[in-house]
Image 1 (cartoon, rainbow, N blue to C red):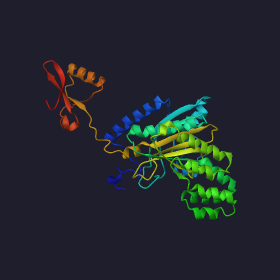
Image 2 (cartoon, rainbow, N blue to C red):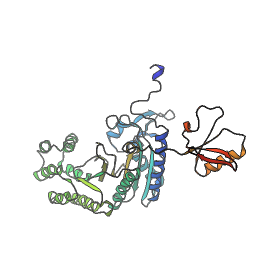
Image 3 (cartoon, one colour):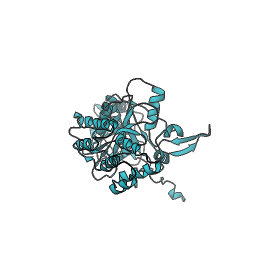
Image 4 (spheres, rainbow, N blue to C red):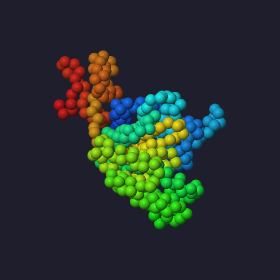
Amino acid sequence: MNSKERWLLPAGINEILPNEANYLEKLRRRLLDLYASWGYELVIPPMVEYLESLLVTRGDALDLQTFKLIDQLTGRLMGVRADMTPQVARIDAHHLKRQVPTRLCYLGTVLHTRPNNFAGSRSPLQVGAELYGYQGIAADVEILSLMLETLREVGIEEFQVDIGHVSIYQNLIEQTKLNPQEKEDLFDAMKRKAVTEINELLSNVSAPLRQMLSELVQLNGDRNILQEARQVFSAATPEIHTALDDLEALSLSPQFREVSLHFDLAEARGYHYHTGIVFAAYVSKHGQAIAKGGRYDVGYNRPATGFSTNLLTLLSLLENPLSETTSAIFAPAQQDDATLTAKVQELRQAGEIVISGLANQTGDAQAMGCDRELRLMANGWEVVSFEK
């Protein structure tokens, strides 16, 4: 590498420049204030920890996304966090150990070995909230409501929410008695909604069960699809009817009356660790989910549901988010003037941005982004707009 290329960053690793950093910081404060108003307490997990604690039961996908390194003090394998959710669950289970429902939120950078999609970032700014210790549907309703409120707080008003319940698929596939490889093949065919292939993979499965799995991929649409599902699964196990009850209760929640809800009962995203309702938000002209969550189990025997999103992705969806101009006051370079120093301090304490000039510096006040300046008037130092 020649000296001119030393400043280049690795693919998918980005730095944030002043205007965007300032906007993101304001957004970060607003979101944390929003979560606090709902009773969610902020936690700050470590950037690295021992690998077995990071991965828990999340499966191969998270393992592949995690950078590994050796701890020089112990020789043990560590990982750089690729997802903060397992860390927050560990904090709840091993540090807080509360008997009451616990609400936690977080915001920080995670690191991926590869981008999730073409030209995506490998260092997302993950923000999310988790609710532990409550098994009822009310927790899922609250978390989904908070996820949607997060999008609105950022400035995203038009979105669609996809909702599923992984226990429907989990329950059906366990009844098939397929081996692990056959289950993976079926899962892939279900994702592609390849009905012919699904029927071929289920050729040795009982006809009623094969029919339910085959029709499962067609069960997607608005709230009315839940009634159709009742007919398809009329002879199904009680667990599936309980899942449909949960989805119906969520669909009737007053918080979502004005929200575009789309139900996909074949949704099995993350079925290795998700245990109930799952949801994701989408916007037009963006193929990937912009926020997602659901009920899950990462091995701590504690009811849990939550959501997360990438704040950088949300920012990229906004039109001209950085168009707002900064209002700043320029103070001339007169360090020996006590009255000027006092005035500058007074203005800063009042919330103004005051940039002090430097002796013989290059560039004037406006070149430094100031729209006003301090001038010595008959009554002392006063803030004057450049238009005056």
